[in-house]
Length: 250
Image (cartoon, one colour):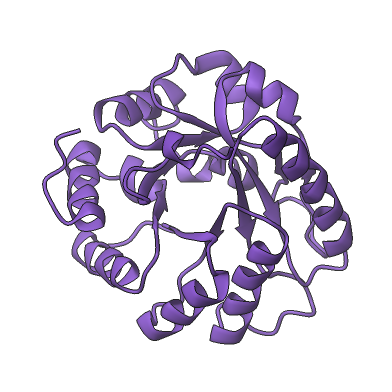
């Protein structure tokens, strides 16, 4: 049985993402948030549904501050060309490190798409055998993708997540609530969680979060808009009130 309740509450979720160091390098960090201990303290004090980390951070810093999602693949931003992110951590390692769910990025439209789909399938099979939910980062990229944020492309990516058996798909939001409603419908019973993206002005970010939840998304996976914020616990609480539409006393 897949244990979504380990990372969701009432079928909704707020995840704290801190896997950007591999993908972007330290360019997103300052003297405070470059320290994983700072992020994990936020995850613990704000009672996030889960924190998303790469395995190296888990091995050296994680002490069960929040439920753990380990990202199993990744790439740097240093190489040009068709994107591919291959496996860096096994399901077995993730379980040993305390993960209650695993994540994997698929760049649909890349010439390397078949390799990532095949690798995902093996990961999903093993994770499900152990009852772990699998989250697919569905990011259309590559020369074949003309507009990665179009309604059609995002809906296609969400549908692929359903078809390949992902329990949750992590998607980008194009700013159009009607488009997101179609994306959510395309995903069927697969939950849709929206990525926070680059740092935004607080009020517009919160308004966007409201639109995302009204469109039917199951939640948000936020990184920079939390840990780059001067008051991360305060912004986390505001997001929880939007997601669960009440004061969260958990």
